Length: 215
Image 1 (cartoon, one colour):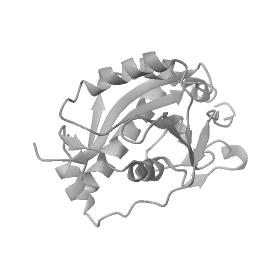
Image 2: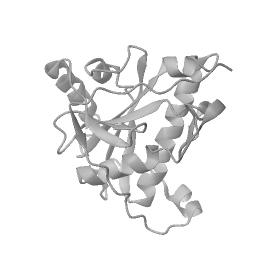
Image 3: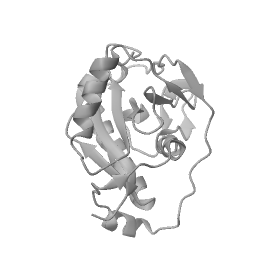
């Protein structure tokens, strides 16, 4: 296993103040697992509530030191505790530019676009997949190079971490009566129109989130 280096930082055009954690209802985890289902009819949730949820799921709980430098503990499982997946709120009410959460700095910031027209076109494609859902779109992206520095076959580990992150959001949404829907497209076209920290970043998933409504 090779030495693990730090995570690359995103360029941000503006920074949001750190948010408090969401208030969580008391629910039995067995009931949460059994009641989880995909809700495709939804209305928007407050942007600040969504940002708080993103931070709760993706924030670092412990940070490695010495030989464990670059590793951390989060809610989702991760290959070697690297946690290479970043989550961006790319569209929805209140979002003028994509918003990324930096777990390194524990802050949110706006990410500049490369091509507004192409970006909007990619967002419209994602929105058309859930015509009865109004809310926000999330993009999950990971740095292949970060995993490559530590493991062989890094791409498979990146996909595994993306799946673990999606499942963590799905359970959180169930507890909070939210709609969380992983979408088919990976979001490559969306990511292509963002100023990424490196060309080694890959789009690994897209998802919708809103307040669940009865069908």
